[in-house]
Length: 185
Length: 187
Image 1 (cartoon, rainbow over the protein chains, first blue to last red):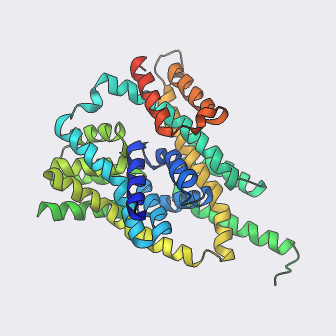
Image 2 (cartoon, one colour):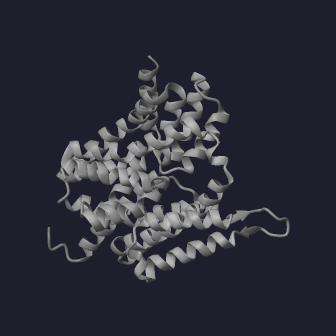
């Protein structure tokens, strides 16, 4: 199968399997892109989510563009993005045409509660997998805890959090280097 | 030229809405008010459908608005408009990043940024968790009520994902079974 077709179809599959926002796509991304295809690592996924949240556009699309570009340049970025949105176009068009009361059907509402409960468990498991490679010492543990509290309880903007965390990381590395004797100077 | 206008309006949304699909809602409200293409009530339906169907929510919303406004061509054009700025901006950033991959400074910045990004994902998970598993308020004598069946299901899926051989299964299998469980047991 052509690499480009593979890229498009893989991301289309992700579009079909995602319920909710870009975060709900993470478990599917980990399975398809990291574990199955090897197109990106867990660290890279975290980087893409970080940047995807601070840049224009919705996270799911930004992440798809990133992975596609890394794998196959500009055409890859475009194809991955088209892949991830293709199922939405088909599914939503059908529902908008025939089932405008779709979300009010009781069985859909019940099923959706089940789906969302499952998404919670999937995200939790994904975060643990990511954490193994991103939270590994005192500095990163402190950043993780502080960011979690500030994001969830204080509701601080992700853009501010990401920028501050980047600065903290940079400063921490500089300090370690300086206290390490400055051998590289 | 309604298609051109749709493309332009959604490209604008894609360019200025930073974050997840929810970030696009204020832009869509404004769009509806300015153009009369759809009402606030329509938008509420669109949000509900977008949340309960496969696909990233922000993309679903764009497709829905596009379809309502100008049929299937509208759905396609609005969606392409929404993703157009992302493709341009992200390709520029990704190219830049590839160039400076080896830089110690970039590496140090990402060292701090990764745990924060992980925390933001955890926070999004907690937001979904509180929305689905807990109802705040509700009965007068309780501060909040727990949705026990949903909580039980979430815990069961989590245990399967972490501690059993079932973790080899594709996530969509768990999603499908959970949808079935929710529908059958009337969650």
